[in-house]
Length: 267
Image 1: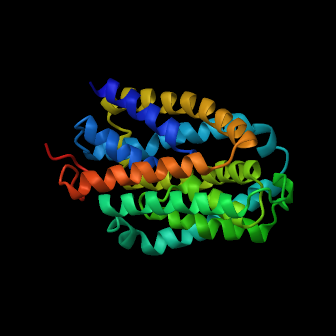
Image 2 (image 1 turned 90 degrees about the vertical axis):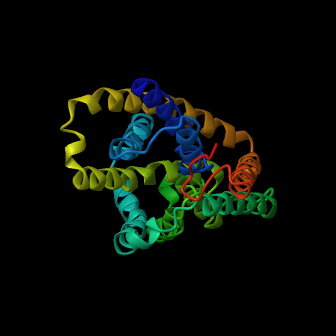
Image 3 (image 1 turned 180 degrees about the horizontal axis):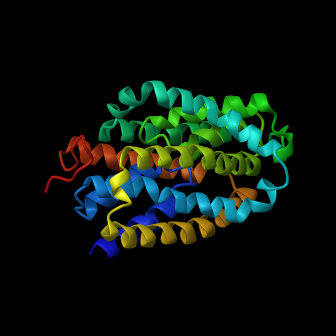
């Protein structure tokens, strides 16, 4: 069963990590539906398989990433606010994990996407390539991305919204969001491994981890390519509607007692 769980979680991770729909919210539902006890192993597993999704970004954008150092400097500047805030407020952020907060942030994020798209209809964006993103804009996107520490916000959703507000077109906002995930998630994963070094020393954990990692990578490659094609033709309103529907589902499950504050089903 561990391998089946690892495969399913890898699929969910790859599907939701880069879409602005909150991978955290989907992982809560998935682990609850699977009735999966979140032991130290599975908690570390959920963080480490994110590297599979990150590898997908590097795989797709490797030419852009290794064309020069400037993009890396911009990503470092964009990561800086998240890193600082996460370092000083990590204990407070941990206390925010609550199914009600997840539901509220899903709905709020959905409304924000719809409002932005309605207000930016037929707008000519100022920035139409990654090369045009300035360091100041990268820093501001990083500040907005830090809001994703609130469960249910969505890291990609927050950084994409930040990009749109700062004049990036949809495609560039999404691309910068994908690339900004590289330092953000690598450092978060490295910190988790540092905190739980015994996780990788257990040979029984390596096979499920490999299954989840490879699955997340393969699924994320297809999702990223699909997403970039989608937003080249359409806007973010469908994702906003989806977030609102998912948030209402969370809220309904929470208010009826089916889902408790810790994100576990009560049957």
